[in-house]
Amino acid sequence: MDIKDMRAFYAIVEEGNISHAAQRLDIAQPALSRQMKRLESSLGVQLFERGSRRIRLTDAGRVMYTRVEHILGMVDGTVREITEIGSGIAGSIRLGTITTSGALLLPELISEFHSRYPNVTYQIWEAEGARILELLDNRVIEIGITRTQVDSKVYESIVLPNEPLVLIMNKEQEIGADSTKVELSELKDQPIIVPLRWQSVFIANCRKLGFEPKIVCVSDSIVQDLLLAKMGMGMALLPVSSKTLLTDGNLVYKKLVEPEMSTHTVIAWLKNRTLSSSAEHLIELFREMFLGSGKK
Image (cartoon, rainbow, N blue to C red):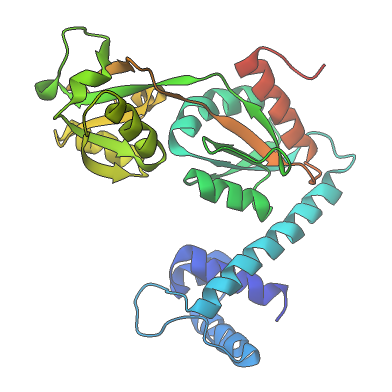
């Protein structure tokens, strides 16, 4: 197995089928199929489940994917680091972000960075928080934007100011006399849509007030939560920045109080990794734009 086999395997998994992977790699589909059969033969294992229109990995294939992602991240990162030495601010920055923080931070950030360094290009992954850290660990990305708590022994990080959680509801379901906020006690018997990461804290806060919340959906997709709230399935508990993802006159946003709940965004990168010059400058711009300070 060589680096070409790894890139071919990785492309097939990422694209979901052989034909799309062949187009991405600019090779004929039959040739790619033969290459994978030779790879399986040389390893003595089956990497893909047969008989499915969309690619599905066997147990061996899943292990292979994890290792290959890490190896390719190391190889590509090493090439970038070496070629960027002395070349100034250029090349490509690889970023990973969760949905809300990316929608809130990246457009303004990248627009400003592009105006300063027009020769830099960007590759952006969108995923949930744990996957962002996995991509960092495997060196697929240089910088991750997440709401997941990070280990200070493993990652350097910038923690942005706390962001309040709000209840997002269809106008027909609006509760509370105040147009800007709603108390937690007012949510008794109300259908609630809550992200998995805040489920336990939300339930604990409700129990302190003497009631069990009526949770109708637990989800890791903020966009899905917004759409369910729009359809009237329930009230979605989300960061206030979620307002940027869906503009709809039928939705009402109210800050949750008594008690308040909040979250924060973390910008993280590996401690033991030499970042590209472009990535280092982007991190400084993060500090400048969102914390009001740069490197001292």
